[in-house]
Length: 114
Length: 119
Image 1 (cartoon, helix red, strand yellow):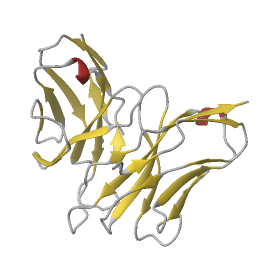
Image 2: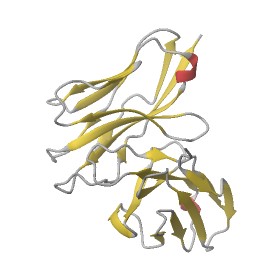
Image 3: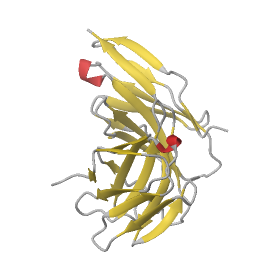
Image 4: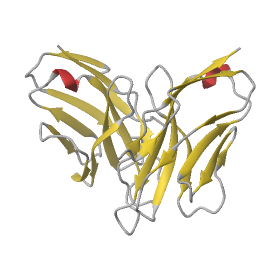
C-alpha cells in the first residue's frame, strides 16, 4: 500500500519563476492538504482540497494556488517566486468526513529559490 | 497570539530515560484535536498520537502517551524508555473543527522541540 508520494524531491528556481509541485495521496484518501515548512520552523498550512475544491485556506497570498484531480492527486502552484518561498513543501492526505482523521504526510519537496 | 507553544527548543536525554515534551495550546473552539508528529532528519512527518478535546482518558500508543490537561490547555507528550532512534524534531499540532460534522481541516503546528537521545 503506497503512502503519500510527492514529486519532485528537490527543485531549484530563480526569483520570478513559477513552480508546480505534485502529490499523490495514500490509497483510499480523498483529501489533500499542503504545508510550507521554512528552515527551523513548524509547517504552516497553505490550503486543503476536498472533492476537487479548495475547502480551507491558510494565510498565504494568491500566488499560491492549487488543484485537485478526479483521482484525488493534487498540484501546488506558486507564481512569481520570492526568495522567501524557499522551504520544504509537505503534502498530507486524509479521509474526509471524520473528526479525528489522521493526516499522513509525504516526504516533501525541497524548493530553493535563488 | 501563538495557538501552539512548545517552550523547549532542544532537549538532551539519556537513553532509556523517560522524556516529556511540553505543548500548550490556545483555542476558543470547544471541539478540537491535538496531534504529535515526529520529523527525523529525512523530513517526513510521522504521526505519533492523537487526543480529542472530548476524550475522557489520556491517549496512549505504545511508548507514547499524551498527558492531556484540558483546564491548563496542555498536551504534553511522554516517551517512555527512550531509544537512540527517537532523536528527531517533535511537533505538537492542533485542529479546530469548523464543521459540525467534523470535516478534515488544516493543522496548526508549533515550532517544535529538537530531541537528542544520548547513549
